[in-house]
Image 1 (cartoon, rainbow, N blue to C red):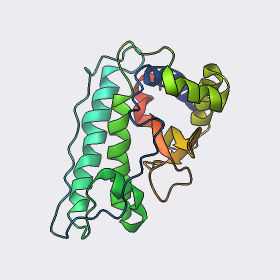
Image 2 (tube, helix red, strand yellow):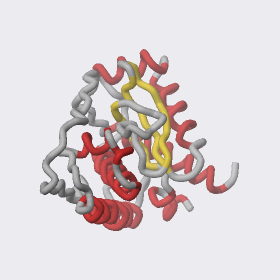
Image 3 (cartoon, helix red, strand yellow):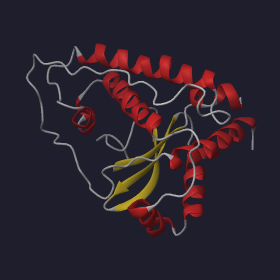
Image 4 (cartoon, rainbow, N blue to C red):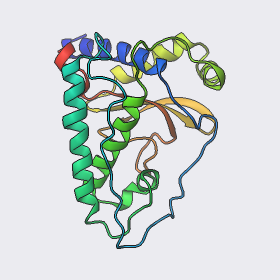
Length: 219
């Protein structure tokens, strides 16, 4: 294993633990799909805003350091929001919500696809982590994980291995697919809601495996 693989694996282990501790899935068990035919008039504008972090920059230390969180949120995520708003000004038919946009992303320029994915993915990512996270899931989520992966430990192993083996930049997902949980990856800022993705479904958990998510600390 080279240094890059080791650093990514170290980040994945801690990132997955943090995310599982704060997992929020209000629609779990309900495959609520967006109305992809929902378009506004040509003179409307869908405006996106950078959501604040739900905790302090240093709140996830020692696993994710303050500098990484500040750079990741204030620079990378902010850039996706800014570039998405610029790109949407050139779009004639504007969806009424992000989910509708992602569901028909193939109909939009690549600049919209990249930045809409970056905004959606990161907005979800921040909410999936919390200070002093960790522990076992409960309720319907725990039952679904056991049904799909046998044990919670096996789920963590499969998730981490899938993420560590993803080549280049992208995301690793736990998603609801045909009423069953599955693990898969997407390249760059794609996600399972996009009609261009080979891995489709309703995202439950997403882990950022771009280098900017971990490189400053884990090298």
